[in-house]
Amino acid sequence: MRYPFLLLFFFFLVNLLPGITRAQAQKIKSSPFSYTPEAAGDQYNQRIPKKAYTVSPTDFVILSRTADNNYAVIRYGADLKPAWTTPVSLLGQETVEAFSHNNQTVLLITHRVQAEQGSQALYGRLFDVATGKEIKQTKLLEAPSKSRRLAVATSADGSKLVAYHSITRNEELRSMQAAVYDASLTKIKDRTFDFAGAGTQVSAQVQIDNHGNQFVSILTNNSMRLSVRRYNNRDNEIKVMEVQVGGVFNGEKVYVMDTYFKLHQDSSLYAAVLVAEEKKGEYHSLKMVRFDYAAGNMRFADEFRFTPEFTEKLNKATGAKRLEDIYLSDILISSEGQTLIIAEKKYTEGGENSDYHAKELLLFAYDEYLHPTWNSVILKNQTAPAAEGFAGISYNAHLTGNRLQMLTLETLKGKTDLYTRSIHLVTGAAEPPKAVGLNVANDQQVAFVKDFTTWLNERTITAVNRPNKSSKGLRLSRITFKD
Image (cartoon, rainbow, N blue to C red):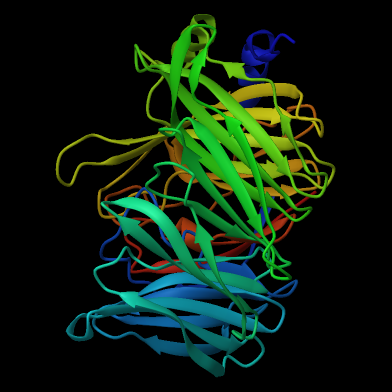
């Protein structure tokens, strides 16, 4: 099948970029907000990119850094005042690792290094979502400090988690020791993810679903073959599915540049893969596979080729000389099975303390059978100082039914604000960017903290921003969009 992108590219580009309007929004409430930015870490891969969760139609909980080695878990009510605040003090070599919630509790996981004992460990702390009282703290997993950093994955509903320890030999991943827990931090199962016979690999992606099934993804055969293994908690059955994503296709050798995985609660795992040509090092295509463990099969989307015609039109629209610095950033799946892959251009200028840039978003949509339906681009031009990285730029995406809402911090036509874009997932029809009306400051200080943005419902969001240059601090705002 021919890809509709080349025919529809400029149509959707026009739909996404025409004049900017003022969003029909009303700021219901605003209050002072205290926040201390993280001092260090991988700015490309934040350990906790989301620090706010909705817990009722009006309330939400956040994790906020208040000072060195000090955090607070806070629940805010309808009046934007804290219903409760629970301080969390960390030890000298302890850092936050994960943050999530379920209907009854809020979960914080920390990573602690005890150098004098030569060990590292993951600790889970549970807080009552109604009162903020800490109800449990327990050690989840321990390993030698010389091993790779311990890691954890949590389920979408916060009811399950898996902590795991990578066993390596000469920097090659041989196996993982894992422990699965429920929402009360009661251990369900110890298990081993054994990669013997899988060939050479250096890392693995681990996800866990709401039922506690673990999905482990590795690249084998010199990173040419994608292997996904599903482990359940009832027995020792391991279901393996594999697909060749790199190698020689039509006489051209390609290799894997980037992967992104999204776990769906119907026992399927979606994998998006960007591959590049070995000879030129240029982007070759986008591939997507659905590993359906309920049906016991794989479904493949049509490969999207980055043809010279496509890259030429895209570069003409963006002003770039070539397609580069594109990273897979999300896979969104509607309740009806429509799927959207989002890729983003992100880079630094190079050198110490250089600025971070987040630019165009590439959108690739598929129907429930993984047939391509539409493709488009959202042009944006965001810059942030090195100290902030992507904490304030890039984007937030929220899917309600088949309506996708994109929220970005941008300066358009001289106005710095949060902008919303609404896109229909089935047709690709889009509204122009609309200014929310928060009057976000435009200087070298912290102006917007994306991690605390959350949707209370389809029309109401919360955001943390600094209104103008003269503002003494940040503000927490609740914004409701009119019909």
